[in-house]
Structure formats: C-alpha cells, structure tokens
Amino acid sequence: MNDFLKQWGEAAYTTTGFFWMALWAFVLGYIISSMIQIFVTEKRMQKTMGGEESKGVLLGTFFGFISSSCSFAALASTKSLFKKGASFISSIAFLLASTNLVIELGIIISIFLGWQFVVGEYAGGILLIGISWILIKLINPKKLIDKARKNLEKEDEGSGMDDSKNWKKQIQKEDSWAKVGKKYKMEWQMVWKDVTVGFTIAGIVAAFVPDAWFQTLFIGSGQGNTDFSFFEILEHIIVGPAAAFVTFIGSMGNIPLAALLFGKGVSFAGVMAFIFSDLVVFPILRINAKYYGWKMSLFILFLLFTALIGASLILHYSFDLMSLLPDPSQVKVQNSEYFKINYTFYLNLAFLAISGYLIYLGFFKKKDVDSKMGEMAPKSQLLENILKYAAFISYIWIAGGLIVKFFMN
Image (tube, rainbow, N blue to C red; front, side, top):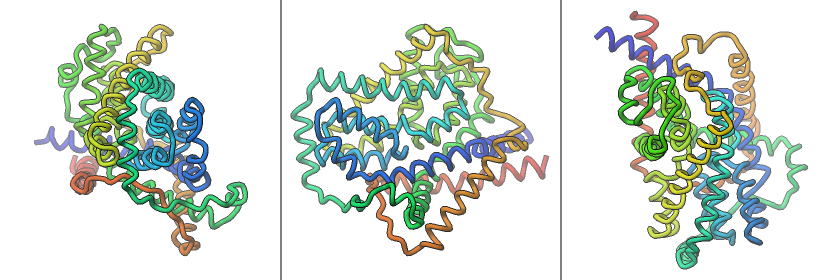
C-alpha cells in the first residue's frame, strides 16, 4: 500500500510539473493562433487557394502553418476550403500543416523533446504533404473527389467573419484585441480536456508502468539503445499510431507521453509516428465520413497513414545519416525541480498576466464586442462526455496524489 501511495504522489507531481513546464508555451501558442485567426480570415484563404494546384498546395501549407492546432477546428476549416473550390491536395496540405506545422506545437515539443524533434516535426510535416501529393497524383481518385464535393453541396454554409476591413487597421483597435481574447478563451475550451487527460496519463505511465512493458510493446527498445534494425523501426512506426489511437487526446496533450516513450527507449521514428498520428484515429475517420462519405474517409486514412510511415522512415534514416539522432538520455520525464525559480517561472507569470488582460478585455471591458467564431467539426457527444468526465477524474486524482505526496509521506 505504501508503494502505491508513493507512486500515486509521484504520478500527480509529475503531471503537475509537466503542465507547469509547458504553461507559458501553451499561452504563447494560443495567443499567436488567436491573433492570426482574427486578423487572417478564412475568406482570405479561400480567395487564394482555388487557382493553380502547386500554388494552392504552397498556400494551403502556409495557411495551415498559421492556423489553430486543434484537429477538430482543422477538419472544419479543411472542409470549408475544399467546398469553396480549393483542390483536394491543397485541402489535405492545409489539414496536415494545421496539425503538424503550427507554432505552438513546435514550442511544446522543444520543451519536452529537444530541437531534433522540432526539426523532425516541421520537416516531417512537409514530407507528409509531399508524400500525400505524390500518392494523389499516382492514384488520381477523381471520382471520389467529385463525389465528396457533391456530398458537401448538400450542406448549408455558415456565415464567415467580416473580411472587408484592412487587418493593419484592425490590429490597432482595442475591439479587435477583445475578439482575440474571446478566441483565446475558445482555444482553451477546445483543448482543456485533451491536455488534462494527456498530461495525467503521462504522469501515471511515468510512475507506474515498468520499462519492461515498453520493451515488450516496442521491439528492441531499451534505455540508451539507438541501434535498431529496419524491421524494429517499422514495428515502432506501426505501434506508435496504435498507441495514439488508444490514448486519443490530440497532439498537444500527447507530447509529454511522446517524451516518455522516447525516454523509455522507443526509436526516433516510432516517437515521430506517434506524434503524427492525430489524424489517423477513429473520431477523425468518422468526421471525414460525415463530411465526404465513407469511401473518401477511408481513402484519406490510407493516404495519411502511408504518408506517416514514409515520413517517419525518411526522417529516421536522414537524421541517422547526418548523425543527428537524439539521445534518449537527454529526455528526463521525472524531474524533482519542476518548480524552481528560473526562466520558466518568470515566463509563466508574464504570460498568465497577458492571459488575464485578454480575458478581461474580451469578457469584461469589451464584452459586447461581437466575435463570430470559426466552425468546428461535429464531435462525438459520447467521446466528449468521456473526455470531460475523464478530465474531472484526473483533477481528483492529481489533487489526491499531491495531498499524499506532501502531507501523508
């Protein structure tokens, strides 16, 4: 019993420490994302992505890069862009970029995994787009694309944001920043459950799951081992998305668990595949089926999973060739000094103050300012309820564990 209580306390402390480490990065990322979504509207994207294909892919990648990292927001925006005339591959480029190339994800990865994984994330996002483009060219699923467009034509399109005003003038107005504050709150509303459950799972796994379990699940893994055979790497790449499927909590919430996997000896390719997997899980498959039909949804799943495998393999062997593969020992998932007075402490205080000002501006000082929010993909109510109650249970677990650690040991 004493061992369990000790592990419980360590799990709760690790979860809290993980979140404290990442807090300023979340705030910075979502402030940037909120600013871009207010000042660069979807209508502007639609006007520029409907032309020549290669230009559309580049623009789709760029617009995805400056968009929200929330998978459900990305799915809705992708559907809208595709319906408004963007090519299929341009829409896929936007979807992949908005979930893999966004600024906030890179910041979180740098904190937990280091610069090699940041490079891998952004280079991998571009590879995912490139491989998908090649596959679409080779397969040429014209009938599927035409049928998907017909499915979307049956929908009523919601009204978008006002696009008539110059963003340079808008950025100088307090009302515009009130809209940023409202959007910033919405960003947190979209991810709080995923982040809570993801960080809690990471803390539990760090404290309770023995290394032998990882070595069984990921063949050939182990502390300090970076010499994997091709088939071991391929197995890691396949098992990584399977693990993401089981713990579907979004890419932002999954990063601490990705750090844990790497610290336990999973290959660089396997960890990258795990991070890339937020678009190849069942809730995303179901939403794509609702939008485009099941045949197109399964095709998108095949497309993204194939691109994921290819990108992870290319990244691993390219980094290996350049002697850039990161050392698992550099990742410390359990650290007794999470809360010391350092740059993280001051950054957290500064960005919490900025958060408070934006919330005050959007919901108190300028609460009457109208702000039309972007469309969200239709989430499963069952999944949302499961995540909500899991988040509440997580808070109880964390509070109990901290009490055990600091007052009962």
